[in-house]
Amino acid sequence: MADGPGAGQPEGWPPAKPPRWPQPAGQSIGGASPQQPPSKKRRGRRFLWGCSGAAVFLIALIVIIAVASSGGNKASPPASPGSLSPTSGSTEQIKPAKAAPTPIPPIKLSGTGQQATSRFTVAEGLAVFRSTCSACKTNFIVTLLDSSGQTKDLLVNAIGTYNGSKGVGMSAGSYRLTIQADSAWTITITQPRHQAAVSLPHTYSGKGDRIVGPFTANHAATLRGTHRGKANFIVTVLDAKGDLQNLPFNQVGNFNGSTVTQMISGGPYYLNVTADGTWTLKLSKP
Figure (cartoon, one colour):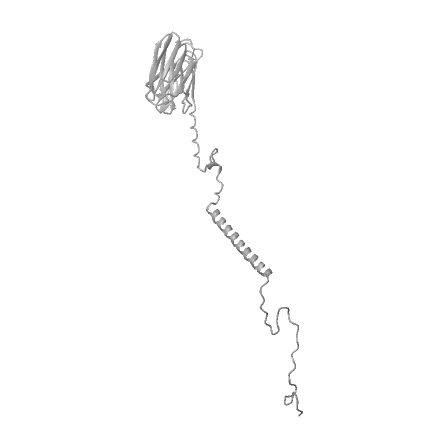
């Protein structure tokens, strides 16, 4: 073997150096990345991402709070039209108005001359008897009888033609009429209920027998009356049931006077007038 460098070394020594492959930028040979300070551009991006994340979290928190608040104030379902007040919009239910009572149908009787009518039935309370005899020349008398045939009231006692009315307080039951006349006659029986009453002051006027009303008063009223006639001028006060309350006037012939009439029961009230001439009745507060 020859002396000199490489003497005594095996063949192929020194080993050949590995080839140098191109390396990616910023990476050293051997795979280790050099430690370099982060650039200002990367620090800016990290700051923006941090701010964005905080903003997203804040928005999500606001949305959650809003949803929770709206859940406690859920809108009520629309109310039915009948449950709302037409003026205030309140959800308080309006009680349905009570239906008006059915009017009692009138009872109509007719005949000629002296008659006893068939029986008829009335309800308890006020009944109004309207009688006419347009061609009578002598007595025209109408008497009300109860179910046993006893006289309940004298409705008409006139001579000659007649057209008038009278109110009577009735018990529920069966009744009939006896009529004395010399011509054709008609009688209509009505039973007024829940009539609208006028307030005081108020004036009524008419001719002959009449029932007028109803009117309201607080158990008393000033009554001024006039009458132009020759026979009785009698005024009585009835309550809504037809019960007698007072007799303010009981005169004969012409009359002009006043009084304070007192009533026992509550109103409304009616006035029964018996007269043969024209009359006026002025009611006012006492």
